[in-house]
Image 1 (spheres, each protein chain N blue to C red):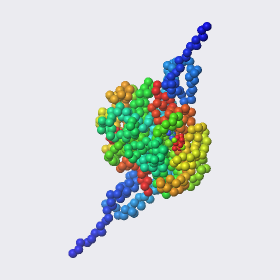
Image 2: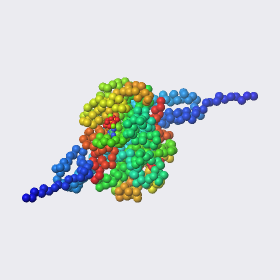
Image 3: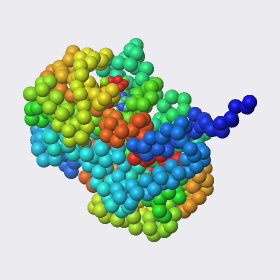
Image 4: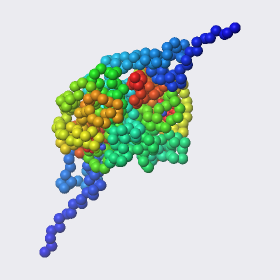
Length: 277
Length: 277
Ligand SMILES: Nc1ncnc2c1ncn2[C@@H]1O[C@H](COP(=O)(O)OP(=O)(O)OP(=O)(O)O)[C@@H](O)[C@H]1O
Ligand SMILES: Nc1ncnc2c1ncn2[C@@H]1O[C@H](COP(=O)(O)OP(=O)(O)OP(=O)(O)O)[C@@H](O)[C@H]1O
Ligand SMILES: [Mg+2]
Ligand SMILES: [Mg+2]
Ligand SMILES: [Mg+2]
Ligand SMILES: [Mg+2]
């Protein structure tokens, strides 16, 4: 007897699988075990589809999703009475020491240093602290400000971390700085974006107790009810509340991306669509 | 005889003069030689006025001028049929070598290095080259794209240079890439912003011949009619035109600021108004 020989299907290599995964549309799935086409056939079919997608975008809107989300959020917070600020991205490393993230601290390893004294901001808090201090006794109580812009952190793990990302941080100082007001603002904001969420207590090195805003297993935001001891080092002596959201994580949640890279400043994806075609 | 003693007016020190100058409103002037008030009186009067200005802004708009200009320009170019792109700000230093600004070149001294292999982009060209190459044969001819975002250069001189500034770069590749089309686009754009200008021929190390767009003695933009030899290194083999504008210079021209710092990402000025009050 001879066993009947099943035709051995050539398996895709890992790099072929990665290429195919990058070529999928945002919601799309592929089952490599059931795939009947050769790599070349499948790749070529997906490439045609993605070219069509990009042409359709160019036909219909021409707005970049990250830029557009920044504009949408800006309008929301301006309408809610928050003042739009734009602080430096390249900041003195001394600010980090004042944030409690000096060279001796583990978190400081995440910071991109620039020259001897500067660094790329890993968060918006220093700029917002400075603005709050300067606007205190100038603007009516409570002072409400927000910023949206690039932040930088060295990261190792994958699907929800970028080294270059875009943060939103809004805050309020003075009257009505309660947990309830903070939860209300977060709720209004995420309802406006149409993103489901859950708030869970957490803690971090910089702020102590935080309220983390989760979408499934992904942190969308850490929010804080001040005051906290560090305020003194920034010349702040009033109650405050604030929250920081990653815009690329909001896009990942909204568009169901598997990997946050699709939402990033990128030369590999445009509006979540692979551009290596 | 004794000469009659004129009361000697105490002159302001240089740092007092600088403080007063920073406290002036955008159009305002002061003549130190005719000023009758003491430094303390003058400073306090100007501080009250600036607090009023900031309160009025908070009452009336809450939009940041730099952010708002980015949005206004974005809308203009999207309406003109250009695709909005957002590329990385932190880029491989290798891109600079490919732009002809390797370590042996004088211009490379202006670049902020980050770690061994990365740098802060001093221009938007590398990201736009990569997008043009990827969109070629995907988007209909001519391909039109633009980007607005932070750029970084080490600078020494003063009134029109920032180390952190915001660039707009628009470009077109394929058909109709003529000097006339480029001049038309520049004209439409600056008419839209309501800024007078003049175009003068110039040249630079990176691009060779350029058309420089001037507002009085200040360069608003360098514009280029391709193709140029460097295109090959970026995989581009079609005609193109493009221009880069500094947004803070546009604000300086528009609002008649003496110093560009008033228009920058800053903790010292908000919408051109001093915040050290
Ligand atoms: N590397 C990153 N890439 C993308 N977004 C980020 C990154 N780090 C932080 N964010 C976003 O900024 C928000 C506020 O920053 P925060 O310092 O709380 O992050 P984090 O607690 O370090 O997040 P994680 O635990 O996921 O690393 C986060 O909730 C997230 O949405
Ligand atoms: N350091 C800077 N600060 C603010 N804007 C700048 C700076 N450098 C360049 N720009 C803006 O970007 C535009 C395009 O950049 P380009 O490389 O042509 O500048 P440049 O020729 O070096 O300008 P300049 O001769 O004034 O230094 C300039 O016309 C200007 O509007
Ligand atoms: Mg983290
Ligand atoms: Mg957190
Ligand atoms: Mg220069
Ligand atoms: Mg120039």
